[in-house]
Length: 258
Image (tube, one colour):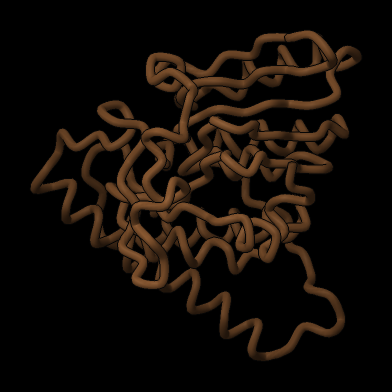
């Protein structure tokens, strides 16, 4: 997923529930600090490999090494499991109204995509019940903006069997008032990375912390356990951490499995 060069308005302050404690504060402090270090690491990688474009070359990336799982299991080696066509994933994200109250959001989330996608959601809102998503991710800012609008409209989100949702896509998926995923849906996370020209180390650290704080706040407000983002922070941008069904429910990213 990419961080855009545009400047977002600062999010409003919010308070944790009354039972929040020091350990939670330490946890999120470590989360944001880790994000900064990982972002800086990838900035170094970008300097040595300026043309690296993980999404546009191959939307279904290999899984991060996980010794506790079978790497040949379909959810960690999803080539055969994903049935959505690569050319659909690589095209700019589009919104298509389908029968039975389904809005199909498919494609790469390019910078600025939220404007036209939100416009289409607003235009067809009275006909939509569920937003069905297939995307390899892309712009974090746009994914968050689309997600917020999905929640404001009170819509559900879904990823069907054979569907693919990775990188910043799970943030968009989190916007659903209720969220379902098929048992053969593929959902993956990895580190954010800068898509713009070289930036200074202090600016990179600031950008990473601001973005991670925004994502953490957003997930909490959507009813998703922000601890899910640790898996993104631990996973290099040229790999994906594929979430299994237990994790999807544990972190409340999915409210019901199909």
